[in-house]
Image 1 (spheres, chains in turn green, cyan):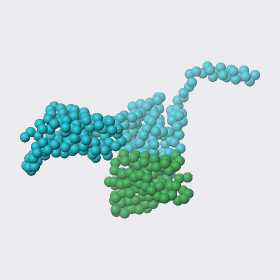
Image 2 (image 1 turned 180 degrees about the vertical axis):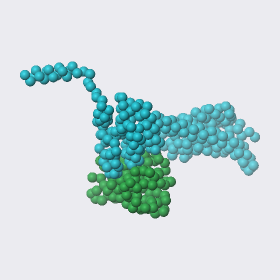
Image 3 (image 1 turned 60 degrees about the vertical axis):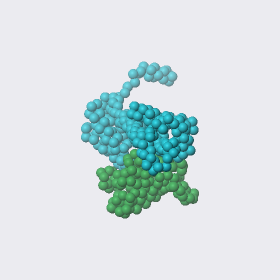
Image 4 (image 1 turned 180 degrees about the horizontal axis):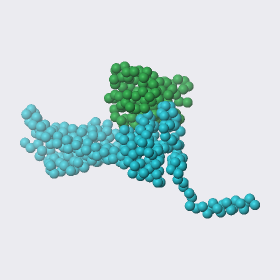
Length: 133
Length: 288
């Protein structure tokens, strides 16, 4: 069973907070513990901030995934921005083009159970799944 | 032909028509969650306000402003005003044409034009008032948020606490840095405790700002201690791979404060030392 739970458009800085709250709500509904909720909220924060910093507009969608008997939350962050030039560099700790810590995407990968990054000149799509225990 | 007079003379009839139009029209989409009495009352007020402002032209526009404010305060959408006026325009044009009993194209166009000429200024006025009210509310909230943004509390000689509550965005991060550095200089602080108990999520950006603030504080010759790190936040920080080893961190403000006392070579001594003495005596008596 699969289903879209909610989606949030990211355009302004405050939309990051909206996305985080929506994510917290759905992760609570799916029965995640408080530590996993914090991990999910942090991952959403990173993905939403990337959209806000590097593109005009993007969207974060939450989906429920089931792999019986497991239940999971799938986060899809998609934008039509310029894309990421060097995919292996952004997954390296400490790499940043905006003067940040450069821990965002590799951090999300460690926070979540499954991580997938696709990017070309038409935009970027990050898919991440966290399984509830 | 005076279109306005026709409307004003028959205002009761027109209002009735208008209100029935409002009730069974598209406004239901907006007002479905609000009680029927409330909608009815507002519709009546809307009708009165519009009629009155037609009657007295320029002088009565305050009633209009008040009405717009009321709609904003009730949290009703702008569509209520826009569609309401649209319905009024349609009804009054129809009404006047019925009264004239004409089917001449020229007269029809003239009636339309005259009706538009009164209603458009009303519409613009209501629109402006509505958006101004919204902007006021927004800027007030922004100000209120800024006020509780980044207070700096000197608790003892050389020790200052900065409690952070809520989401940290770019603007707040700047404010935090400014307040922190000014406060450190002004209060001659040696140790600053930054308490993040009330920060819901510490992501790389928040961490980056905290690291920068701590580094800037260090340049001023003071030390930063990060306190109020909840277990789940500690885990996410480790997962993100953020290095916070440049400055001391503690789980609670209490522990951080104890460390700060040690660092500034201060001590808090209980004034009521006599009760301890008595306990000691009692203890020794008990032993014998």
